[in-house]
Image (tube, rainbow, N blue to C red; front, top):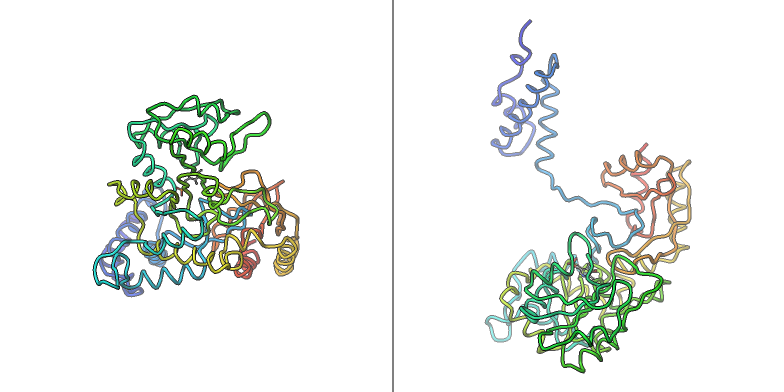
Length: 445
Ligand SMILES: *Cc1c(COP(=O)(O)O)cnc(C)c1O
């Protein structure tokens, strides 16, 4: 019997055949051919009798296509959680996407003053817009909220103490732990109170001549219930200002709009925190704000200027496409169109009855056993932990196996499993994606 390895083509031969079916550069075809043949030799060594030529070409074409396609792909988020860190947080508005394309695809006055014809400040207009929207004296934008906190501590508290409630020295997610960030930035953490109860007087008692900041951290991914107490922002401001110490408020999500009109608990707005006297407020650009990944710091001009002068500002600054998207997102608020135009707010504000209609239309298109069930969605993304938004989902039998099949479609669909049923919750699906969702459900057994 002849060795089946002898029947395999040479690398150059397979590469030539692959190149004849593709516009990819020749060296890439050689790399792919080598990999595919090595794999075939392994299969033969493991007992395969013969590997067909057609199979080899097919495998090579697929390997080449995989190599040439991006890893990032759009997915349909039917989990019911609107702001999902794993799925890219806030989808951007049409205006933000246009701005990114306009500014990213050419040159811009990013750091150029068009009036005088020389170097200008990055993000100057953004400062004006944020001042207008939050009432703060000044504003600064960096890579994300984690960077914002790190930079503020590095600029204002190196070698000095930052007072935080023990109940707020927490992990935000993805390994972002407040005590670790404090340590890394060179500040010293002073924890006060207990895990469940901290009073304004606990902060007051801990202040000494080493105190640089009082810090409040928004409980963004957990909720303490029962025998709990936290001082109000007003109380904390009074304690801090009586001793001339600035108060840093890490709001996490940071909303510019009130959440209560949509049946959600009241999340403090950035403007309300500034009005209450917080000296610096930090929040994310891609959570409830509904914009690109960014960290926004607003507050007192003198403090913001110290942060702006920090040498690490250069390492943490944002690029032109982020600035463009953030500016466009914020201008949507200025125009009073956030609820209508920003995807995150459109999804939060969608009436349950509308979700029910859309679920019914999709269930009808898919056919039995698809049906419509009531389902509780959530905001997610470090906002309003535990709070739900009433809505509707398309339900299918099949649990984890069907969920896995849906994840392998184009576009992949991310579902939720509850009580052994597969739920496709429309709270986190934009209406313009209903047709694609329906199509994937129809074509997936
Ligand atoms: C989300 C969050 C952060 C981190 O923000 P990123 O923009 O993800 O860096 C920090 N603090 C709080 C309270 C948060 O909720």
